[in-house]
Amino acid sequence: MAKVIPDGWRELAAGEAGGAAERELATLALLERGLPAAYTVYHGVHWTRLDEGGFSIYGDIDFVVVNAAGELLAIEQRSGFLEEGPQGLSSRRRGRDRNVAVGIARSRTALQARLAARLGGPVPRIEYLVYCPDYFVRQAHTAGIEPERIVDAAVRDQLIPRIRAILPPGEHSGHAPEVHRFLRDEIKLEPDVAARLGIARERITRVAGGLSQWARALDFDPYRLRVVGTAGSGKTQLALAEYSAAIAAGRRPLYVCFNRPLADHLAHIAPEGGLACTFHHLCERVLAAHGERPDYAKPDAFDALIARAGELEVPDDLRFDSIIVDEGQDFSADWAQQLWRHAADDDARRIWLEDPMQNLYARPPIELPGWVTLRAHSNFRSPRPVVRMLQALLPAAEHIEAASPFEADEVELLAYDTAHPLTTRVKEAIRLCFAAGFHAQDVAIISWRGREQSELLRHDRLGANALRSFTGQYDLLGQPEYSGGEVLIESVYRFKGQSAPAVILAEIDFETLDERTLRKLFVGATRAMMKLVLVASERAAAQLRDKLGAHP
Image (tube, rainbow, N blue to C red; front, side):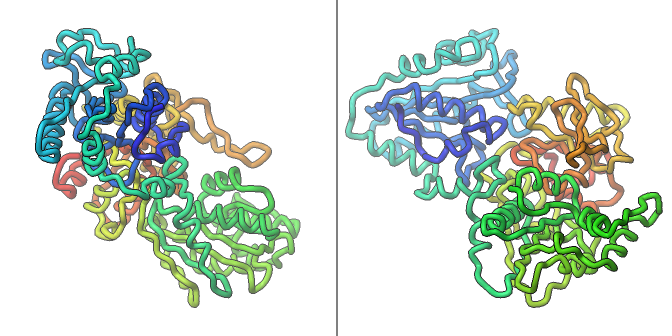
């Protein structure tokens, strides 16, 4: 079995990385399993500080295989579709076409020059191989690459034999240790990379450690903790950790948020023994305990529901030992005071989680005097190009640290108008996601508009893709019902607090790029874990381009 450097990559190998990263992790597992111990494989798939090459170690080199003699084989992997033309093979990366032969030749030359400078003498041979596991090369003789150096979908089961034929195991040489030191320096490998990767465990957003551990390690009495954390910092993960720990300790927790899908999601994954619901659902339960039902036919039904719940005595079964408020920026001060009535006693733990930049309802900030405040600025979920875009648009986003383990593709912007209708552009965006290696279930279309105003949410399919959308109904267990289809489509309001590997933020339209619009863009864009495509009206796209100073 080959040695793989750096370690820790298996954390994302069980189908959790998504897109091109998942395809490269599958290749990495194949290389480790198929090559003998004489080989070492260096890769750039997952650590936290990648260069502009995305998943690459160097330029267009995704893997470097080194034999015992210190000789190298540079492997470029191109997942998804390729184009064949007069200039050879090409693919689309980070918004532009890239010639495969030219890219790997340039990277090999640069790598060879730097290795020569490091060794100060003869350089070991650097061979190359192009691996395109999803594409059948039809005209290998015109690809600009020697046919025996191409492993395509037709012969992908020959990848390991082809590597061994090009780069035999070899015998140990004196310069091999220096080659390995060079590669470790070149990829900026750090000793704690596996621990840092642990922060992005489980689909990048599930923080194992970090906020969910050290926030709960704080010790003060009474326990009143306010966490002001940016999108993707692990606030909901902290909520789940607190909720689960309370149950394990024999206490009853209450998790409350404004957004129904987020409450449903946490209720689905949390252990039994507490209550996870929206604030309005909690008020409904208070009324139900007194034999009353809200009248939703009234125009002010929700305000009346809250007011009536505040007048009634809170029953014992709706008092809790821990109260966790998620997406607190959506709450009013009156709601907060009403929530504290549900504490079992004065010693009940209280955690308030919020992100002021996701305040879509223009609520004034809540005063929580005497509470300990913790600020979390690291975004572990959003790709770094997304964070860079938001920093350029939002002055308030400048303090956010881009901590995703993936550089990923640059944000793509598609404009729709009468000549290029909205649905055509969204179908194009779906193709871009598929071409990048994402599956249908990895893609979420997020409408800028609400359910009633959205044109897209009226469709049950776009081209060959059946859409999966909320029907507006709930089953007998209170779970939301969705239509058939694989590509999820939701409004930005309902998808708040959730995420997907590839996000298409569509129907973006506004007259002025004001603060409220920017906050909405922030919420939608930070739902993406690996890839983001914006589909905007021509007038909105023009303002975004002008603000960014360049065309994404």
